[in-house]
Image (cartoon, rainbow, N blue to C red; front, top):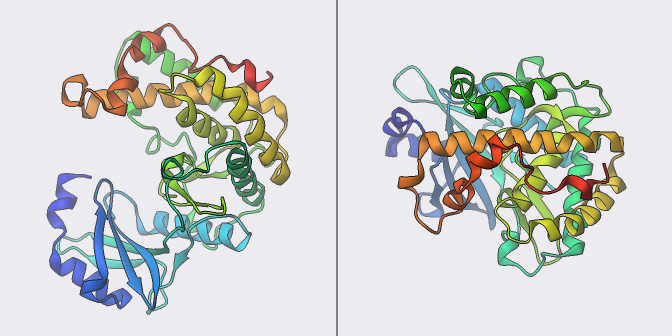
Length: 331
């Protein structure tokens, strides 16, 4: 979060948000403040999430586009945490910050369950369900039109969406050349309705809960964009496999079950699977550059996921080594 956004947030703004949603002061608690201020609150026996973002990061139109798509998916039977109206009938409430900008309040039904690593769900049945969720989203995406054209979300390669894009373009290094090569390859791919539409772009296990019956509820659609369905699949594989000592053995087991579930909900030409390693490489380069820019090796604790990710990563990228051998994709 930008320091200027954090500085503009105060108790009066939180009180204004509570007033818009009719939340009692003793029924709300802060969960996180990494990119937005995230709160959990309770009302009439139900749990909800209140997100307070800022217009410096996302315009009101982009937030409207996000919640419009979320509720479209929910109406279509996808397992997502739907957005809820404020008592004033708004999905997005604008709260002036006193400096000419706004905090944007949105509320969501709290997902049931817990992160999968806190459950006993990890296994074949979960992988199938995970695949069905992405397949359902992609199937519904093919017919999606925003309720208001002004709410249209960006495409995946919009400069505002590409992580550390300028940092990589400005540098003259082997990693920058790798980045430009993979980006050029992906930008040249066709964008046809059967393989391209609205995607979550970050549907890893940290962004959903699983309940005791194995049902998955996906949340955090803040980065949703128009993109290739293969990109969404690549992000699932990237975060499932990266940093795992057993990645090579897990990959075929996970993918076979995940793809079986996916095809129950959506049909994607298997030729697109050949592009998954390229999308994984894009995320690998972007994440490496982002972590080095914002943290660096010295600032990370020895046992952190990020430090383990960075260890030897530059050499792997420069040598164009895949995250895992892609043979499991049957390409």
